[in-house]
Length: 165
Ligand SMILES: CC(C)(COP(=O)(O)OP(=O)(O)OC[C@H]1O[C@@H](n2cnc3c(N)ncnc32)[C@H](O)[C@@H]1OP(=O)(O)O)[C@@H](O)C(=O)NCCC(=O)NCCS
Image: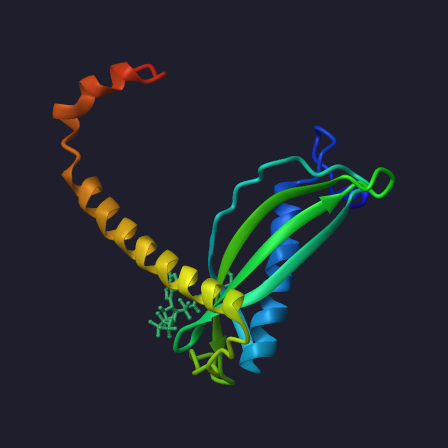
């Protein structure tokens, strides 16, 4: 991690890590699909530990799941202080990519070969993650539409905000 990747606090920008991870997700997805791919969504972007200038960051990635035209790539980021050998798991994120054909339309991807129990576990986890995400999306949309502002304004008293009108 070179100095120009750092923020004003001297740590590596989260955006730099995300950008590197996006490239890795692209490499994995496009190699599996055999086509150009685009990033559709990224889940699990939580930076658990800061990354320092000079650290060596390794991104461990695998295609965990394929749908019809989409693929899920899991990426585990580990940063290492090369002098002490100390390693830190900074985040694990899941990129959903979609394969595109020459007309830029979503195109079918090959099935995924699960070579061992670990591959099967990752595939099933991805299925579960997708189901939960869909449930969350529906639940949140319903809740959002149900917020009656005038009835619920008093709830704001429980939070650290100031009603300023
Ligand atoms: C993602 C995109 C291809 C979806 O196009 P679409 O016409 O809605 O296509 P479809 O409905 O057939 O969806 C294609 C696949 O994307 C998946 N998908 C669509 N929206 C999604 C979302 N918000 N999250 C996860 N997957 C999504 C669908 O489930 C489908 O997967 P499947 O074929 O494996 O079942 C289109 O929105 C796109 O090109 N977005 C821009 C992506 C991009 O440019 N990214 C770079 C960063 S700017």
